[in-house]
Length: 452
Ligand code: HEM
Image 1 (cartoon, rainbow, N blue to C red):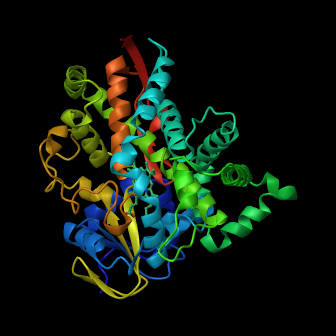
Image 2: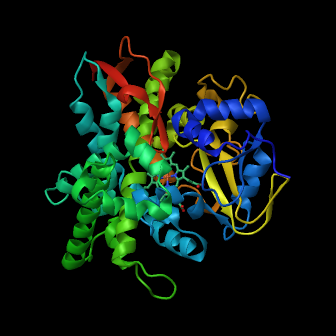
């Protein structure tokens, strides 16, 4: 028997999920507890939402070949392409993930530290003093430049990359708008390509989602162009991700095709900047709302400096607490490839099981006084992947986790070392949906009060 859940009103559930998702989740958990079923339109099997650590553990440690995140992420197909790592499952996912992982880990990743620092300082120099401005736009500019340098080996201001950078900004802006979000979440995946084709021809160009589709196609074209020109120039002596992926071969000696490369590039470009930029904006928001923590974290940065990141324990805890309280993705999903028992619930093959980051991170029995921003929860403590998972988990855990954590520390340390900040007066920041992520409203306005 499936766990209880709201009555079978799929359309109504969908409208609430798209419109006011977090209050909806709170209401459902309040009414049905930490495990509940949900009916949404077009789902092939039942869907169960878990806010229960034993279930989260089962989902993250179970057979990766039967826990299909690609199928659960199918609504991203129109946005990222069918060959995106996020949409793959099974052996092919494992193989491609193995190819893509090395640049985002260990010493290789640290090679990008200088670029992260340089890009941040350049952006902070541009911030006005004494006048409110939306810092989220700035964190996006930083993270987009960082990921483009990492992927292509040259900055986003390089004339060869400027058109692609501008297209990506347009695409992410349109794709995370209200219409973009509705298009993304409500388009049946099997009709995505058809709807895209219609939107680029004749009167179809007047359709509300046409600008999004055109921005996507333009981005696509420019990514292909960059891949082609790198193939022509050759990859010798280059250490960037595109060159590495052009050279990469799997066990059978096969390389990625151009279509696969394009979708993987787009995935890294989009997933690798939007998420980190939003978390940076949230961290600044929480620090400004909690001045005692801002003072402590800033004092640590000014004492330790910005180079020895391992010693910035308060900053690290503040980022972790930000991702606990305001994770940018509220849940991660798996479609079961065979019947499985998840957290004691028997589910058939084809069922969708969702690990709810948002609800677990706010459970009062796991995090006392859960709505309070309190980084001390994480100081000197090892986190349990079944109760803290802002980057998801198991074989599908975020590919860029180490990279994002490293980048966020460098960016925040350099911001706090250079400027004093205050919240913009009279502006109340709310949590708003941006595509599939959740961000602070109004671009998270702040004021620089002093420069060092
Ligand atoms: C604060 C920043 C970030 C957050 C909170 C975040 C969060 C996530 C989450 C929740 C998932 C789904 C995991 C699952 O299903 O278990 C994911 C997947 C992924 N993320 Fe991130 N992410 C961040 C930054 C990045 C960066 C910087 C990159 C690239 C450089 C990246 C690339 C990816 C990719 C490629 C996947 C798909 C992995 C797979 O399916 O094997 N992410 N991320």
